[in-house]
Amino acid sequence: MIPIILGGEKVFTQDKVDVVNPGTGRPFKEISLAGRDETRHAIELAEESFHEFSRMPLSERTKILWRTAGLMEERREELAVALASESGKPIRDARVEVTRAIQLFKSTAEEAKVVLEGKTFRVDGYEYPPGNERRLVLSVREPLGVIGAILPFNFPANSFAHKVAPNLAVGNTVVVKPSTSTPFTSLLLGEILYEAGLPKGVLSVLPGSGDLVGTEIVENKKVKGITFTGSTPVGTSIASKAVLSGKRLMMEMGGSDPILIFEDADLERAVTISVKARFEYAGQNCNSGKRILVHDKIYEKFVREYVSRAKALRVGDPMNEETEVGPLISAKAVNEMEDAVRDSSEKGGKIYVGNKGNGGFYFPPTVVENANLDMVVMKKEIFGPVAPISKFSTWREAVDMANSTEYGLQAAVFTSNLKLALNVARELKAGAVIVNDSTRLRWDSLPFGGVGLSGLGGREGIRSTMLTMSEEKLISVDLE
Image 1 (cartoon, rainbow, N blue to C red):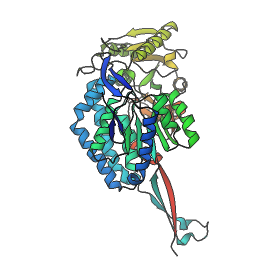
Image 2: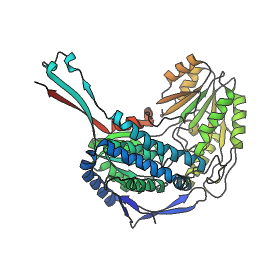
Image 3: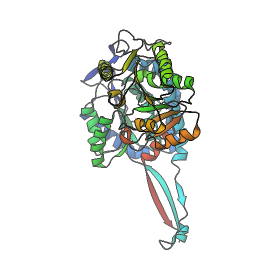
Image 4: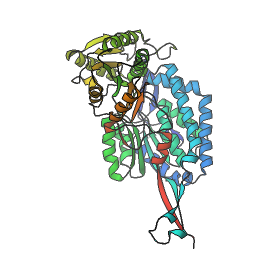
């Protein structure tokens, strides 16, 4: 059995869970589970260690991040195999995620001294208050304290890195609740951080239920900030409770990202990118291209090409180097996809079905032609390999369709007309609009998040996390 990490100590608990390999449907690891008592203790340890850790020189904190990245490099394949085994992510995609996580620790260490440097103000340029000519006013950034990090199942390494590395750089201490579907990778990363020299108490990694671990993190007044990635219903519930105790929030929630393809688009490029954007990791990405809107003049040709590519995708064992699409995370997720496709068929959609894997939680890449706004696949976030394709005749119609959901994470626009692209981008309700590229495009150092029910509070990203999870303090000195 794998222990939890409680302030740097490995602790076995009475409660446990079998982590299931989605590719086989069989248990992969047995993991100890934390409860409210362990979570409360972890928060207390984090608060106790905060005073000393926050006063550690930034250079020393960033050295820990550099050493962590180095140790991750040494254990790169071990981490990738663990990630693929517990998440069902194809091994070559798992390696990419581990590489991103390594780079996140490096980039955080590089950027911290710039993001956290503070500044001085020329208050002698203001007539009020009197006496500004003799004052020196500067700002500094200070850490918040204990941060609760609640992770999704789909990016156990990258989400851990995003939520932990910038907070450690700032001087915050962190209590991590990984998904009980994919906790093993986070436990390995916690182990590596302590091996890299992280002081005891600064970090805990606590697999456990939302009702126990999550609730304690959200309700405990010693926790000063929450960084969350997950579904919109869970995120809004957490936010509504956390705000009552004045917690700083970073909530990265659901998405139903539209891809708009106009008649003058490079069709080959649009098809290739939109297929990958929808079916990568079996469609279990928050910024997957989940709704595809195509101009009616190229609609039939696009659908033929898209369906052909979708049916050709190699579905199978995540550990197979040739696999392009692996399983879903659970049997429940498979049932949800079956319901969504049934709803689409009943409401007039034409269904095309691709290959299906064997032995685990597989669902075939599926295309819904003639999708309409009454279908669940066009209204809700569909976290699986189902691609609805609908048609439009004008760019304003396309924008209205794209904006018809409660989400607004990212969007993609394919056209050779730059003026059109900019007009459409201005009208789309999204945190980012990607022109002639994938909704999956993301820069880890830059702000990432959405509008509407896709995001609340600060945006995720190395720089924005450090700014959101720190306080700006003004200091005024009278020089006479």
